Image 1 (cartoon, rainbow, N blue to C red):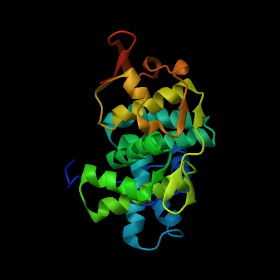
Image 2 (cartoon, helix red, strand yellow):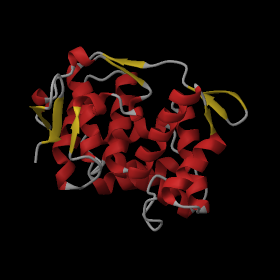
Image 3 (cartoon, one colour):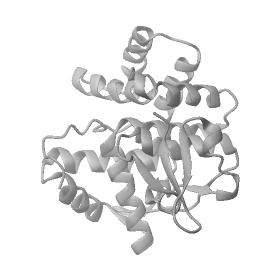
Length: 241
């Protein structure tokens, strides 16, 4: 179990349109202060209550305007990729940045991917149970895990055909080698991984929404990761310091 006092961070329902709007402003070169003011005005029509609005804004800024210098090359590449990205590719960017910024988000989506592999569906109560096992039995964990699940449903990643049961109906194919390599690098910028074999990396359940063609992956060309031989027929991937 992780430290029960660990900050959740991603503890609000987030709509895809809010992410799209935030990323557009970042791409336009808005400063963090301008982004904060814009989001206050924009979210006011959706969210009632100063605390909820502040938390939601914090997540959106955390994803697209995180000031951590260690993540700057990763963030700069996301903004570069945004220029020519279509709607599905922008979802890939939101996903990768959320992984890099919020460990709790990463933990929840990994559990969703595991449940889908085991059962072919995701029951919200089972997801919450697994998150409690990992983070401790707190009401905030129950609530936040459910909000991540509902956010993914609104993003179109999951569908819901019956109460509390979710399904993955389709995979998003990533054909852009640079985008795919950037997405894979997200795991290393989360602070979770230092070195991992290529086979483990590609089979991680956090990639469950995506169809990833390993033949087009160009990890070293991204400038974010290094690749070394690892045993027979495998490679060891690590982050460029």
